[in-house]
Length: 339
Image (cartoon, rainbow, N blue to C red; front, side, top):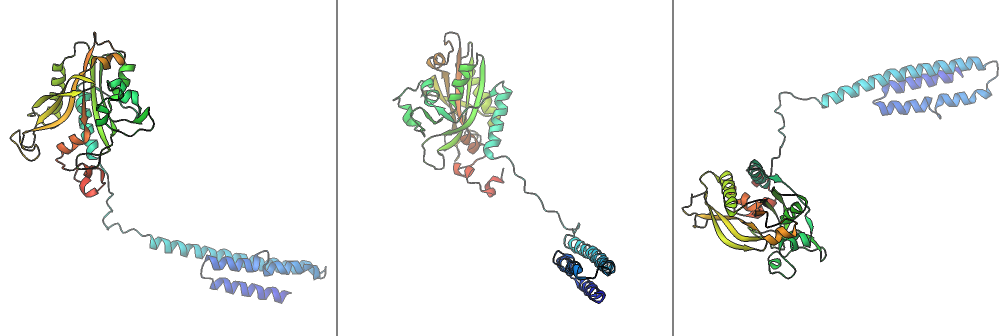
């Protein structure tokens, strides 16, 4: 038995000295010390050893086990140190190499234009208010003096979820909701996405952004509207900007107008941007219709107000001299990095 244990010990130590890595070491451990290992088999055979010889044989087995375990610990430590050294060598950082620059994003052109627009109106005492994109037909049309069958609905043909719920065609519903919940004076701008059944081209999209403004107070006149929008134009497009109002029709305002600004590219002389006219149309506006005030619970005999609507993409295209609205949504970093 002693010779057998000596042979097991000699063989195990030799295999451990030749082990290349931790996997090989683990295999050797299982081969000799595992549940089915050679030393375990020897211990199972102790029942065949004479009772008087068992203490001596047990001592030989324990000595063999201790020798193998000590060698195991030694070679495992060396293998771990070798693996660490290899990993550190592979992961060495060359501090003389130039650092990798992070690709940082920046605000979208629409966001830049919106923040500038909001800054102008907040500076004049307005509050920025938002509302739901999925809206009731009542708030999108009825409460804005556009009843069922009104021709204006054809101009704003939209996406209906059912006969009472739709994707809003304008942010005007935010104005109605504000008038219902807030006692005048009211000064708000309402930015947000709107949806219309338009074909995609250089100036149209079925989804775009709009900013609408509303002022309700006592003794508000068209002069207040003109002064406010003239100041907005000067802040947005430069101090030399002039404005021009042309009569128009909107169901929810009376009187109504469309506002042009003098071309900030040519100073009103005529160029490609203004199509030679010297003027650029940027928004629609007007005095809030008395019927709209009344439907929202505001007495038109006591209060008056004005409203305006601005297409955000139009402002972005003009401000940054972009000639195709589709560029704003194609996610081409070569274009977006210019801003």
